[in-house]
Amino acid sequence: MPPHSSPRILVFTRTADYRHDSIPDGIAAFHALGAEHGFAVDATEDPVVFEDGLYGYAAVVFLSTSGEVLTPAGRAGLRAYCVAGGGFMGVHAAACTEYDWPFYGELLGARFDRHPAFQPGTLVIEDHEHPATAHLGDTWDFADEWYEFRENPRGRVRVLASADASSYEGGTGADHPLVRTREHGAARVFCTALGHAPQAYTDPDFRTHLLGGLRHVMHRPPVSPPA
Image (cartoon, rainbow, N blue to C red):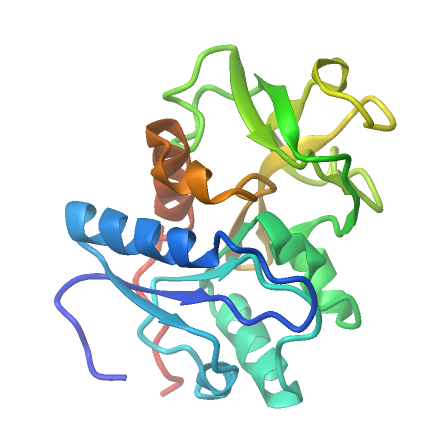
């Protein structure tokens, strides 16, 4: 990939399982954020891009991907990118992706298990210092699917916001860290389980949330080819 004067991110939206109607809205939101804040966006569903090493990208975003979406060579490319210090961001159904690849589960910190019906609810903001949540108050009223995970990542990740399970119907358990970040080796990772509905991506608070997560993982220069 030729050099660019502004940072460049890759938004990957391939689905091999459930496909969210909100994917075009999410792509549009990232393009709008890039135009406003000075970074370029490549959106693709072609897994071959991962086989080329992802060189030149300041961050890779999995936007509501689902199922097994990478080739073996693509998995190797994403792993190499992360080992080299690349930034990774997972949005919503990114947690429903690559169940057969242990590295991906470790990268995210937790895999999707179930969710109740889409409905309004409340998040408890646990970290007001992070750019993805600094603009929010102590709670955030939102409408989403309120993901639950196969394992609770708390203790292995920095939890930024969790669901108040008493604020919606159909949830199980008490602790649902829906927004989190972590360092996985040299890679910096941000994950938000929010973003099911198309209208989320025009919500100013949610867009600021996405921008803050993206800025967090774009903390290093783009990954370069090995010398």
